[in-house]
Image (cartoon, rainbow, N blue to C red; front, side):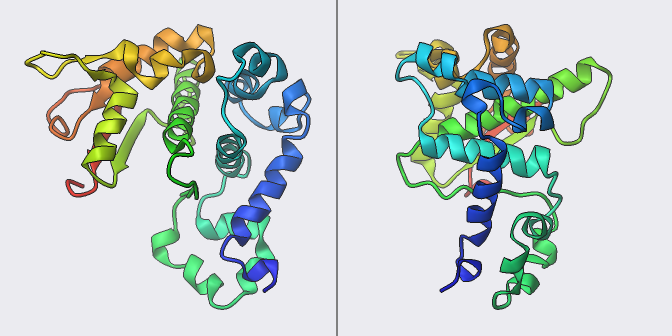
Length: 242
């Protein structure tokens, strides 16, 4: 079977394009840094720059997480892919000739930007999700601060879990663990992923803004449609409710 017939042809081609653009990123010399916003460039150097990675000594994204984050940023921010067909045409046009792939990816249901990450259980999908949320949030904040409304970025998020166990894990990750004995179901934000691993996720200058957004704008499934959040939202639910 040729590479163009592979079900992962798009992923492979995007990874090749991404890695070429990211060459030298750890040293701050990648072409990618010139193709993204200053905010994204700051995040990329914080997450993957050689000095920062060494300083965190073990608290870093692994290679699979790094690839997923970089691929998403290249597809969305650099290539500006408006649809699945658009992304194929930019990075894997020959793969569209295989079988009925062109007809499939041209279907109306694919006519909007969307990205899928194939990551095994336990490989840290939630950390990838949180990194990409921070990328979107901080870029939207920066654009709004300049009086711009950059449609590539958002402060509106919905996180959908496949079941109640993962749903509770997501609430732990974003809001912290339940406080023992709390009748109201209060959570300890200090035990959340973003607070515990802030040295990885968020450059110091942006932590207060990210923490304030997450603490004030997460809506659990029981709060959706009821909680007022005027400047954005992180709605967390399970697919049954959706």
